[in-house]
Amino acid sequence: MHENDDTPQVPVLLVGLDQGVSQFDYQMEELANLAQANQMQVVGTLTQKLDRPVAATYFGKGKVDELRVAVEANEAEMVVVNDELSPSQIRNLENVTGVRIIDRTALILDIFASRAKTRLAKLQVEMAQLQYQLPRLRTSLNIRLDQQTGGGGGSFTTRGSGETKLETSRRLVEHQIAGIKKEIAEIDMDDQNRRKHRDELLMPTVALVGYTNAGKSTIMNQLVERFGANQSKTVFQADMLFATLETSVRKIFLPENQTILLSDTVGFVSKLPHQLVAAFRATLAEAAQADLLLQIVDFSDPNYQAMMDTTKHTLAEIGVKDIPMVTIYNKADRLENVQYPEAAGDGIVLSAQDATSIDYLVEVLQQKLFADLKTYQLLVPFDQGQVVAKLNEDAIVLATEYEPDGTLLQVRLRSEQLPRYAKYLFE
Ligand SMILES: Nc1nc2c(ncn2[C@@H]2O[C@H](COP(=O)(O)OP(=O)(O)OP(=O)(O)O)[C@@H](O)[C@H]2O)c(=O)[nH]1
Ligand SMILES: [Mg+2]
Image 1 (cartoon, rainbow, N blue to C red):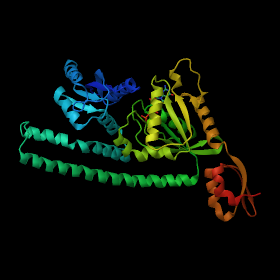
Image 2 (tube, helix red, strand yellow; image 1 turned 135 degrees about the horizontal axis):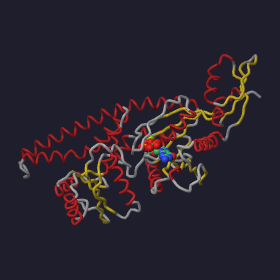
Image 3 (cartoon, rainbow, N blue to C red; image 1 turned 30 degrees about the vertical axis):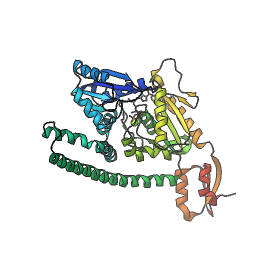
Image 4 (cartoon, protein in one colour; image 1 turned 90 degrees about the vertical axis):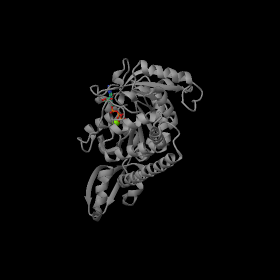
């Protein structure tokens, strides 16, 4: 994946510790993609097999020496490590190599920060960044202290005032975090109210989930353009990691007058930093409210299986469970000798760029969401016009007649909608 090819790129070295996890190679490949997404040029990759990290420098002594030599030989300006390191590990590695050390968490936070466009996404990223900085405040302060005292231990007084400064900046950051939390909670309240209103409409909701860059927003846009309540309300789609950092919900009218709400949200990556998961919890949890999940998979990526595992783990982490899921094996147009659209086990092989595929997807949605539809006759008194209006929005109205006692409607309802309208049933 190459983006913003004209912006200057920082030469970086990647380093990873192979602790015997099965997906290590894939994680290193993913790290290279993340680095590229953050305007870095990967000039080399080093790995080490070890059961456990070394406390002081994360990597073993031999590897750290090798890293120092490789930084010089490749003129790397930064080193990116495949895990979240402790502040002292970062400091020690910086001292040996003489360049900045960035861990995987900081890298992902940087990408999120450059992508955030909405007020909410910006606040969420800022909160995650502050949470990441909080336990690391000591480091930068210590460096400053060391410089002030010429690298020596420093006098008791200097250390004392340093402690005070540290306390002050820590309190400052905590204060900032509290302020941002409050602002996020206010926006979240609005979202909850909106969601409550949606629930009242009883329309089935479908959430697009999956690995970043799989094609979630593209599928959303195809459905919006063909079946949307407002065809111009498309979302941002692009060939980049984390193009989407917010949740968008759109009303879709399927053929036969069935209405659904479709939501598109943030994509996943393996080892999504816990600070980000916490900050984006409300945004990510949109999927937890859905009646059906569409897991979008980039079927043309050789690592698609590992990406599906990542999605599974992330969904569990944000508390999404027991929601029926259909897997969409997308981007089939990029593969040779693959038929599409076609059913495949629990899902569909298709291409978001192909109209026939979208028709097929719509049929599957109709089947999954409206299979339990039954036809009823309802008689709604004339003084309850709002019920007729709601039915027109929320159900499939086959016929409307005006009788002396009220409006007689023939409607198709899902079983869960019946209780609300039971009192109007007309035998
Ligand atoms: N060839 C091909 N490209 C596709 C298909 N679906 C999506 N793409 C491309 O894949 C890239 C990513 O698509 P998006 O829809 O932005 O992906 P996303 O899943 O929303 O990604 P994030 O928002 O980053 O999580 C875009 O350049 C799309 O044009 C497809 O079926 N075939
Ligand atoms: Mg997207």
